[in-house]
Length: 351
Ligand code: ADP
Ligand code: MG
Image 1: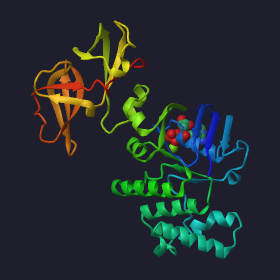
Image 2 (image 1 turned 180 degrees about the vertical axis):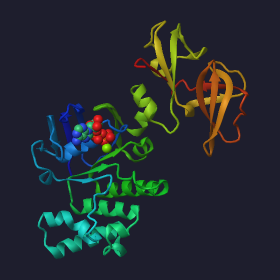
Image 3 (image 1 turned 90 degrees about the vertical axis):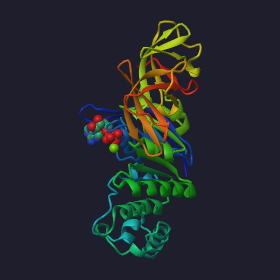
Image 4 (image 1 turned 30 degrees about the horizontal axis):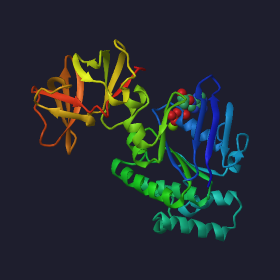
């Protein structure tokens, strides 16, 4: 097992697209690291550059103690799982799993033994003679995982490995993969565009935007203290309220209402300054009665989230959302008041 370190990593494609812009990152040995970002931000390029499938334009890739920047993919000792699994359709499960060992010229009997061992670990023992076309999506995904495990690499690189699974299977695979990584303790970089997946699985995570890392932290840090409005808008299953505001003495004016300065911004703002006020719908207290420091308006929409409801208030023509527990939801047209939690609200200057 080994740490992965990227130093000033840059990738410019022929044609001029700068997919990675002088990126620095350290993933410690044994960590499950999630790389999250919208489509086109450079996630796949980052993984492929670590694996050596793309040549870096600048900077260095270090795996363990070894600078592998100029090293061929096969000699880097990392294993990558692709989004489409990249299984060989004409080979059975045993041959697919043991293929990397064949490349390494491991003897046939030893290859079969290893494939059987890893296959059993992933619940594939009854499928070893089948070809990929005879397997479900979830089973194919396990074969791709087994193939990676059979290589005993220093690090695993996953490129959106769950995105081809249906919602339920995807949740199962998430838990399964996380548990497996814990047991094996292999340094893992897991790429996804699904913020819930990153939050659920990662020890630490990074949020990427157009070739840059915008924030690195634990899922709790990134969820509770997004570093900027991009990250704030990207993380969370209901989007954060991001509202234009201005500092008025020792309070804020937001959507025509007077709200308290967030605890995290105390003493950092100057009178008259324009800010973007951020607070998650989950961090609003909701009331049908007027309340101090509330964003008050008319209920415009009530959406059922299962055990809770998402209430959208029209506050002086600005949409403000609050999550309220089941059984306490208002009706459309009611007056409503959302009181932000001061310890969870944020003030941004980058809006
Ligand atoms: P992601 O995986 O986050 O969706 P990619 O790494 O695939 O992002 O792409 C990052 C950027 O690089 C995009 O603008 C994409 O169009 C561009 N790109 C990716 N691969 C190539 C390539 N082989 N040649 C030229 N541009 C590419
Ligand atoms: Mg991609």
